Image (cartoon, rainbow, N blue to C red):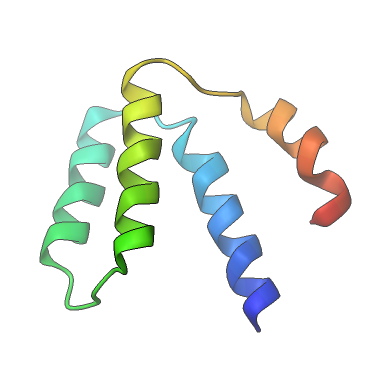
Length: 73
């Protein structure tokens, strides 16, 4: 089960780096802020770092990320 959770997180992170629609990002932030699910501090920090990378244009296209992580997926 833990492996599936990790794969899902990686898939979401990869997808998030390709999202260019500010409305989608705002909805994700709204969801994060209003969700009854409590994120751990590590999860929150990871999301914030990913959003900061996205804001700064420090992203890798999904096709490149897929090649890099393909052996684990």
